[in-house]
Image 1 (tube, rainbow, N blue to C red):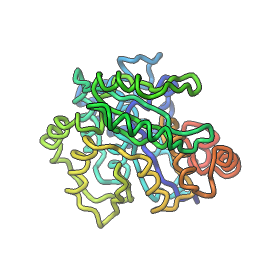
Image 2 (image 1 turned 45 degrees about the vertical axis):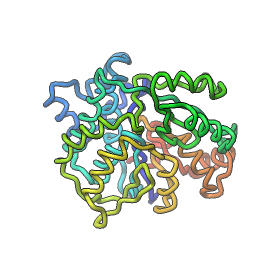
Image 3 (image 1 turned 90 degrees about the vertical axis):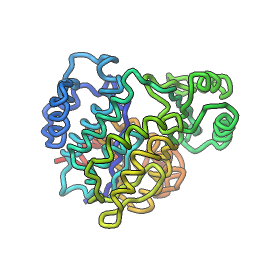
Image 4 (image 1 turned 120 degrees about the horizontal axis):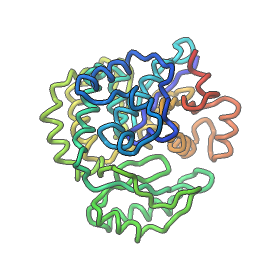
Length: 339
């Protein structure tokens, strides 16, 4: 049996290649989310996933992207074979923290659905600033500290620009339109594969920055009454803090989720590092559309020298022999964790 950490992906993970992910999947937790969506008169996750073609206004828009990602994640986790894996920790990137709360038992599925839906609908016709992504690793997935220095200098020098997410070997920056335009001038253009960076993320607000203060205040007024409780599975938040069963204050989980998680940098790199060190898993599982987080996990493992992984070649060799990163998107890796 493998001891695993589950990493729940954030909004925006569901893409064109995610359509039909739910075909033939039974999932009690997904059913909870769909019942909630139906009660609000909104298209269900299954309905959106079964669409004949991918549509930006349906699948990328904020009011749908978050719940789509969460739904696919929960449906995949309901397929785990308990005789093959033991979940020893749960983490979540950005909005994925809300999904993680439900997976770890800190919120019921009904309250998890309400949290995700409410936060997503705050963005309807209310996109605040934006986000760009910039890589900070070399060709071997090792951290390039010269690039990191350039990013830190840009954040220091450009007004209204902030670290949004520390995403393994990538920097996600949030800021005003003026700040993001300035970033494109200050940071040297980098071509990686078919993408040119800095790369603007579509329909994203400046999440995890002080620009979201009003959103945080509204959430504290409208969501404090959720049934917050200590988790049944340990979880790690975006500041690298471990929340353990029986020893976590539900009010503190609420305050972080509706406060710092919204307005302060989400450090997924630290989150993964702490999970590896604290739980000592045999592997990290990426459910649903979370395969895109594979690079962030691999880069963090390499920076840690986890299991003697020091570059991309060593990581690939390990994956071929005894995978330490299992994406449920890929059939061969999925077979390791489902019946």
